[in-house]
Image (cartoon, rainbow, N blue to C red; front, side, top):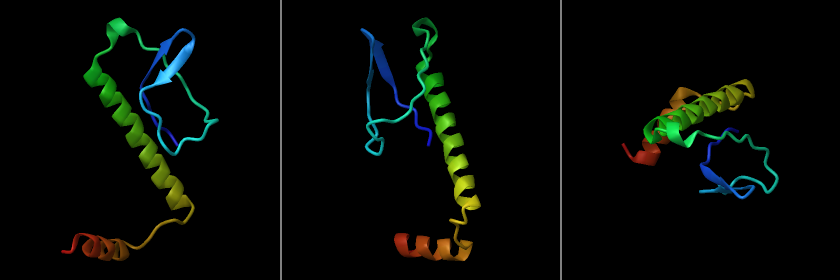
Length: 85
């Protein structure tokens, strides 16, 4: 799983702006310190979205390799039922 969460480092501590509910108390993390003078919020958000997209694709491949897939026709039926069309 790869999830990017913003936070602030202050006084030797990292305070996250949002803690995902499905993260355990002892989760391994990677921390990247950003140069405040070079942060462009729009580009930062784009980079985070790209990382999340890559993680989603990776998860899809893992599910495919584990045989956790279904037929396209089954998926189409499920969507028709869910959205009533």
